[in-house]
Image (tube, rainbow, N blue to C red; front, top):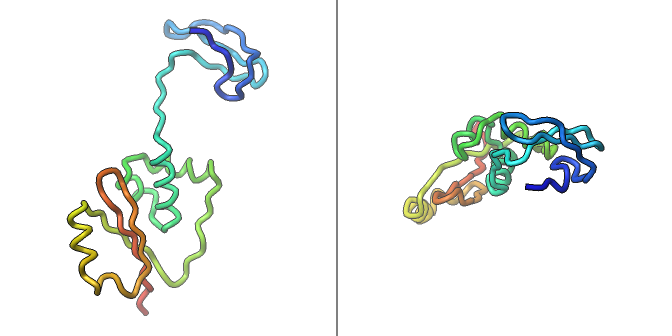
Length: 139
């Protein structure tokens, strides 16, 4: 397998730099980044990154997002730092959420009393649905 460019800066000025665990190691002359070929990395689908950022903006904590999506809370924190996401100030409301399957969601939405008095968004999470509701704090 021939390496054509640095995975970090995409520059093509690379040189061989030893062998690590039976794999050729390379050095990028432009950014001084060491890398190997055929490295099996763990790449998370952009769908989950987007969902995690949306949930964070809706007011969920890192640990709640971890339980829902199945991605480490540290990873979620790193994504928020990477994309420079800032949570808007919330003074008089807080989001609550529920996870439903398709039939449970239909039954929930049939009750009109549960639909009034709050903002609501429904988002897909794999084969489940998440209903996020903004309710006013009660004094």
